[in-house]
Image 1 (cartoon, each protein chain N blue to C red):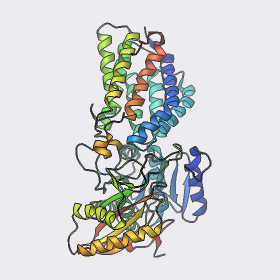
Image 2 (tube, helix red, strand yellow):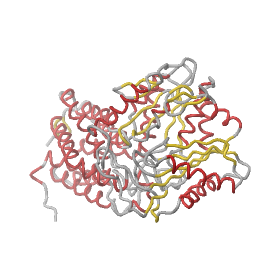
Image 3 (cartoon, chains in turn orange, green):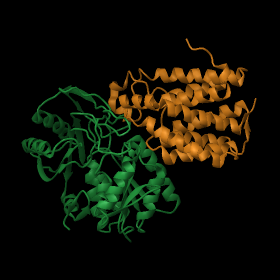
Image 4 (cartoon, chains in turn green, blue):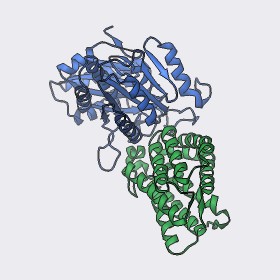
Length: 217
Length: 333
């Protein structure tokens, strides 16, 4: 089942809605090991994205994602602006000119985006960042699709991996970003960037395969 | 937590408007993208100096825009780095044909956004150099952290680099002055309370009545260690020792001393801390040649202070003494 440009727009809108509704939670997480602005910054950025989308809604997937990336860079600020901006800019470059994506193209695009984030932020897994949700998600997505899973099932496997990765950040000592100034004190708190990144992955599953959501124990 | 604001989302814009009105003889404020710029920019043949960072640290950086210091300052949302388009617009506005120096505090967000902006400005043919400040001794500079934070030395570097630029020195020399001040400066801060950001409505972290945070940053984030409250003498000893031993300052050195208020601490307490610092420096044979006391790099309403010491030489003393005319620092004019 191909992923249309309109489906990509649905995903973006679902993510924006999730950010708006989880804003206070993100703020709370960012108060414990940051400066309490992740919720506000992401919400501001994605409200700006929503306002911008109608102007690019007729363009190809790559152009839409690139426009999202530029908008985030110019509205979010902090580290999240350049990092989420790069995610979408790189996804946009990988999907340039396409009006529909095969599941494999979607996975490759997401992978390119995540690689861009890791490069710009100079981060690997285990440093208590958004990478800890995103890399497991892209790995699970690709593995599921290569193993013959349907797109719908692969999306929820990616969501589960992102959720696991997000929860795994709790005991980590941060070695990147503002949380790293706390040293050992950053352990015991879930990372806000990994949390918003899980919402990104979850939004695709909710937008494209809502009826296939597995029950969580 | 009571604040003197209207709507939280309008705090930055309304504050900027107030600055523009109060100091119209010194600076102008542009919106969309937002930046403050000296009223007579661009100054032809002079290196343009641009800095910026989150709002909530006033007077840093907007209060330092003017003759002898910054040509432009880019204010982000509260405690949030500004975006590349702000820095690019500001760089264009202050480019006087002699290049632009970006003074960037070492935080992941600031570095990423200013890096992107520098690339964009260079692509337009503006010669850009960037210097990152990283004077905070509270954070270990290691592979396991984001590196030392840029704090108090940033203010002092902006003043001295600003003076060098005003002398019409070329870009690489102005950048070198900035690097020298950063290399010779060390800082450390502490907090008696956290601070409350406008959209959170409550302090970023809780600090019991009888405790304090040592090694805080400027964004309301918790510090390195929490301990029982001590006297000003003991606190100053803690901070000053860390700063003096890190460089290390030697007997016979001349220092510029900044006792900085985090925003919520009264001036009388800062002066009290200064006399403790003076005693400690004297005991170590470090002469305080110049001093600055007050709220210069703040964290909204945080109660606390930070100490910065810069080892000075004749050139830096001259640059420090040079005239400056900004809303927060003004002498020699």
